[in-house]
Image (cartoon, rainbow, N blue to C red):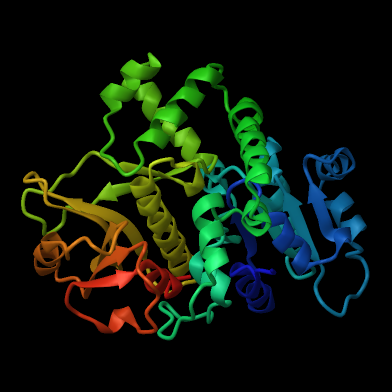
Length: 402
């Protein structure tokens, strides 16, 4: 089984039509290096973790240009890939110098497993010189076909194969365990990845010394996926201040362990405004089936809003809706700051249609309201043609995204 990653065609098109560098970020082992190698030959690949490559990077733009042969005429612009470059203290200066000197003679792709969005906040010296993209784990839609580049929603999705669906559910969407589909391999892969994240990445990229306490915080977040966050409870459990808990969670987000979904309050009477919810990038680590189902859908929506925004199709964001009377819908996707569609996740198709969907759809004037059911059989129909609240199989709804 071969999965054609959804960003590959977009990046190929980018380098054909745009001068800007690409910043490609995403979790460890999500496939960034594979995409980079698919775009260009090995001569233009520089990994900060490789000692030989590191020496060329430290020596500056001229050393890299020599390796790429930029003093020669090329039929096509060579691609220069910098992998894990954010670990280099002076990475912004290197990129600015290289881009300004060789902008018309090479394409540049920068990848990182710690959020480049976070590490680029230190200055605006690269403003206008790059476009950001985020690579997410494999999704239902990605298993079926490579999406049309400019399409928001696929109106005629196919059905994911049963073994692919089971592999996504059990092993998550990171390519290697998903494609292997073997429990023993997955257990070893997950253990090693967690060790790299909570030991190597935290140690190398932050000044945090209390690695064990950060790992405990991550465990608590994993057990509370989809629940309102109590920073007071977390601070007491981890034995640090609330401000420290917030800072550590921000760090875990920058390392792609978790992501935040915040409440939407505009046009919602007595709306909840403060407490966010957290979900994991790797939903396979969520033990509770109901929480895992919600996390799987959250990940697909998170991926979709990133893709739609980063590919220039509008400004999209992901929220949940809850008021002080405890009326709640799991997710709301907004488009250009306006509610677009609501999503409530249920594990069983025996659950009746939630009345809260209609309640909030009327308040928000959202175009669609879906109750997405995990165990329902695929239906070959476009659920986005329906304007009123409707029960939709997850295999149908997720196939229409990205």
